[in-house]
Length: 214
Image 1: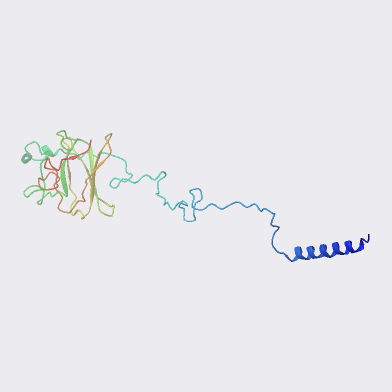
Image 2: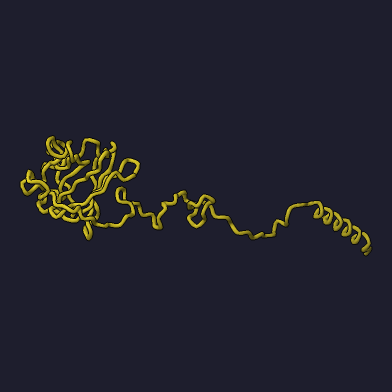
């Protein structure tokens, strides 16, 4: 048998296969390339803005705790008013708890006008006053308007000449060792100065409830 023809055919086929392989720029279809897959949209991949990949924003506080809307991060630090309202004037009759003092002939105008005032109790319908409580007003922009503290009979007042309450202000009350602070549910207005007034939405009626902090 003549093997020369077989060898010639084999050589031609081998050359053709080699040329084909050289001309092909793609990888061997049987080859496997390993590459680390990039994560997308997971909380483990922070974005360049500092927020998590899920789109959450940085709350500023570790754990996302919200800041107190009235007291912020300031610690409770009681300041004695230095006088008891009950005894400040014989006209008080020895007791001003629960009375509206921001009225004509009293602290609405005259020599000692008050920005605001009232009495703090231990419950909305409670009859026990709270001594050493802090009351604070902040404007709608969060800036402090004024801070005052209750006296030995639970009464509080703010004398701050030239101060007015901006519309939309917030007010809160807290006490040392007490429960969470309490906040006025509706925004404070410039005319909301007498907290113990009996007009609608004030705290001189049982329906609305007293200014209180447990």
